[in-house]
Image: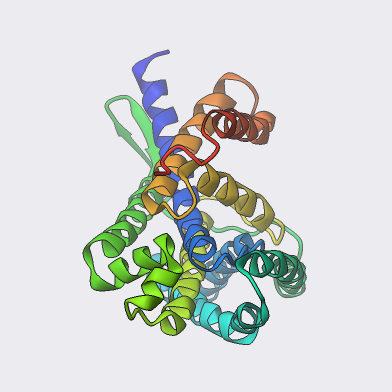
Length: 291
């Protein structure tokens, strides 16, 4: 393998992994903190992608201007969804296991509602737009500008959130709740305020991932399911509640997909992902980065 091909596959893998990291970190916070298994998480990526598509095509302005708008709308939708659905679900459940079971059922309902709503608004066809598709050549490596931009933004968002959780008082409170919800409550952390914030932040991360995805791929109402599955694989590989683990596992999975599909067949993408998932799950049942 020559150096240019190797570098091209690495860049492609990092782009894929960056998208996986953004969506998986959000789902990991929701599930690790509240045991809410939001199986419709990928649908918020899909909605974010369509919002970005609509805002760009209607106004003709740069999608970068609308990325914060998509994040804010997604965050607000997350707050509303938690208030109307998941707060009551958690309050009426007798145990965390029951929260997980009920949220899974509710998530399936949300998934179909959002998919059909998207079909009614945008149709079932693939939608996309051209943005920064010019190629850049450096050291024999040829890559489009939009992929480089998506890579930088996805990495910045993921690393920024990790630093927020590690370096700030808010982040320490969230990490404390991830490690021991009861212990966090006993030391005075206001779980009633943090729960909706963290849930909405997870939805905002999914919306951000969708906005980034729309810059490089065409999207359809059915794309959310596969990204939910990949996010679940990532958080399982990285370790439940480990945000840094999710980031590392997402990058690893992206690289495996990039190299694997190049040397085998693109149609084997899911087989490769599930294959590495099963192997690592057998070797380390609690994930690669669990403590």
